Length: 334
Image 1 (cartoon, rainbow, N blue to C red):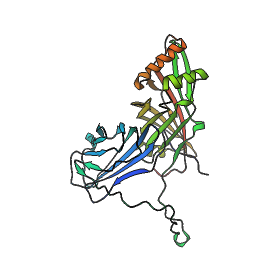
Image 2 (cartoon, rainbow, N blue to C red):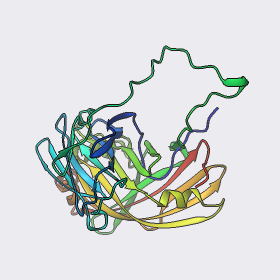
Image 3 (cartoon, helix red, strand yellow):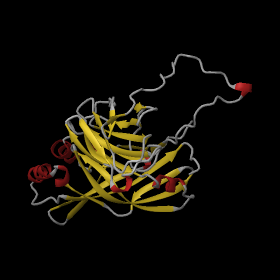
Image 4 (cartoon, rainbow, N blue to C red):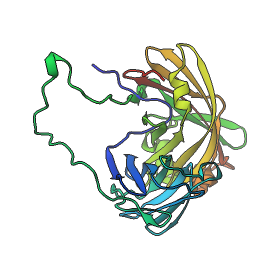
């Protein structure tokens, strides 16, 4: 039986892709890396085939009502369904064969990929490439009794939910401090280093049933926003993690896109990654992540909780700590 697997703060990758291919100014590989009820993680790779340019702009039109949040490696503007993504100073130049990769979170996902892309106003090839193989057709038999020539599968990382923990601390009446946690977490890291953690807000556990219910209904409004997500682009740091020996520790200071209550903010995180051996990794907070309720439009909910509980005050600042364990099916050579 394969070990369940995937690293650092996460959710799952999906197979939806859109690709503009060959013999044109550019090739665009657009992938819906993961999606959930209220959002998605999208990844784009642009390959340039033309003469050298000093700056670039890639445009497309969303099929639905997607709204971009927390974009990485580029800047963007959006007008309704129309999106224009532009270079940053460090990736402005394009020469023949150049590749640019970027990713972003969206709200209101449609599950559809854009059909047409324009680079500096010129269309990329919209040919969707070779048709997918018929799943009912038999596989070609191996030659000389060898193994079938299957492409190398990506490393699969999964969160060990039973061994993982995410907690937060609240302060009321100035000096009363209490610890709470969430009972259901899930997570993955994609092969290109996008790590996502999914938090089921309905599983908030304060140790008091009526308080749990009030938090679900009055603070998190889980009937509308049942999940919170944290997305991190590990980039080259994924290779550093894979290169850790058993017992070795890597410290990372890295931004995270946090989405709660339909609001997305980028917060800095301090992580400690340790290879535990047997393809298990511990990802923990080296110092608490401080989240304030007003960052995510939760301050009215905090006030409602204060009033119904008859308290003089509840702090808007909430320290969050976590210890997440991930396992991999098989580690590649970094």
